[in-house]
Image (cartoon, rainbow, N blue to C red; front, side, top):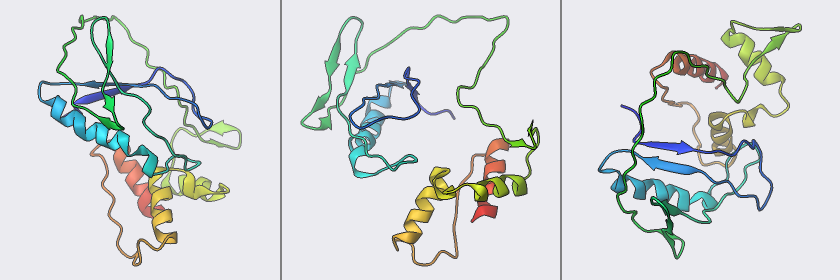
Length: 180
């Protein structure tokens, strides 16, 4: 079942400086998602408590607006998001003969000047260990390393990670299993 929301960002920045603002849209799908919205907004309200990203930056919620046909109304009151009203939108179905999907974030590995088409777990691990600080490569590596170093996790013998039931999820889980 797909997520009952879409997060849409028109900003193409991949890094932000202190004081910069990131604006994004959150579209909630379905009639019962105004209740679900409150859980998502609660997560956004607590952004300032947890650093994340490569540089372990802190973010905070500055404003939340509900968009109507011609207006927008603030729903962030005293640092808390109030329950939004149900609104509706209509979309026209479009039919395309052909479609090109272009990934904005490239991911490729090069060995001896040639792009690798098939990557083994060993090849990926070797590249990871060649990095100066490989613990900041992904959220799993960063957060688990932090938990160990800060003493939050005392017994690192058992580590359970849940992977998506997809081909990509399987690949990533094999890499993380071998890494840890």
